[in-house]
Image (tube, rainbow over all chains, first blue to last red; front, top):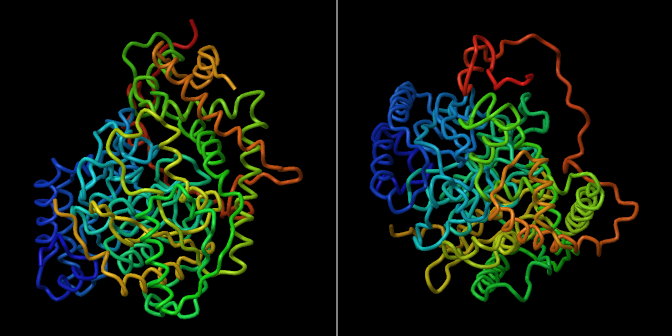
Length: 485
Length: 95
């Protein structure tokens, strides 16, 4: 077996058994990255020297018998996570030369367990996009079909796992940015409950929606990654101080008697027939495993995309005010005076999609429109949350598609932002409700494109979606298929 | 709903963005389509509904007020496009 094909669990066993060293594993990953990166474009920055230094340290830890499941495992991070001393661009030209003075808590937690950082992954600029096409560093290609998008905004994080350029990765999810690329690239991606994982050191897009989560080869690896990064952080006042369960310990408890809700608003006419077929097959698998199905309704689903694009852009317009060329990032050389310097720096540094969202958010917050747009959206958000609370009174988890179609073609939706936004219709409500959800491989289209299944859990009940995901994975073989690239 | 180039110019000024004529026209059309789409929220009866700004019910997060080391001057200034001693330098503000 190739080292780069291994899961966290497989590589951990090999490391602990001294069949392979972390330096060997890291070298194998770096070679793999180098050989296929021209075709995929998952990375913005690759960091071979620090990676090999970390691998040597990990090998020492392993030799001393101080081996955590993640010790010596080569990982990669979306370029939205601050990494001290390592360039962090967030996919934007405005941060092209930015070297963070400190690290994100989630990365520190992985690093403290001995994980090896291979580099920083491509993404839509400031996490604004569903296709990775808004990156200032080129579009990442889907490893299953390089004429197609990998999804976004954590497109590099998903493509790197699918192309076996990293054993596992971290991404962020504001409206589907972990789950949708995981679905399009055939890997597992989990968006934890808002507050479950610290956002400290994660470049902010929409602060009331952003959440950090793992992308992995399988559900067991996902549990390991979530265990490592979850938990309260005094540096993030919105991180919640509730105990982190041992997710791995309950994975194998099965789904007998589990009540799974099927929200009728997610099984609409416009759904791609192949996605529909994969969902029906998944329902059949769960029935065979002893789960029970309940028809439910989330009546305000149709308003989620509109609500999201008001709230997220409003928060973004405020969060991105910090890029003004004074303290860090790009500063225009043509400026005359302070305000002109700020205006020119921003206009030169931001790409189209970021400008568009700042403009929309500024509009929604501007005098005369604040109540009609922003406050109205916050009220509809309450109704969307209430839909989930009501539905979860009767079910343990919900099963839905992740995306209405498999990965679309590069360039297909670039000219029509509204169509691009509507592709997130099944993932956005979860962010608005603040709860957790996971995407996992559930089939392939006739042309060989992965199709993902979404399991939505109650707030802070990642345990149940992981357990349900694990049961599905044991009963199917979708997650074992590999992209030939 | 009709977003005009003048509307785009107004919002761009508020957002400290400078747009080309082509960008203004493009954004006017795209913003018009997107804002036209979000008009559908008007169908929803939200009378008496409390707005949600944060999904997890949460009180203020307090901690002990203890002095801790910070990242320090050099690190804080390391990314400055221009510095003057221990300050961030900017173009002259007052003529």
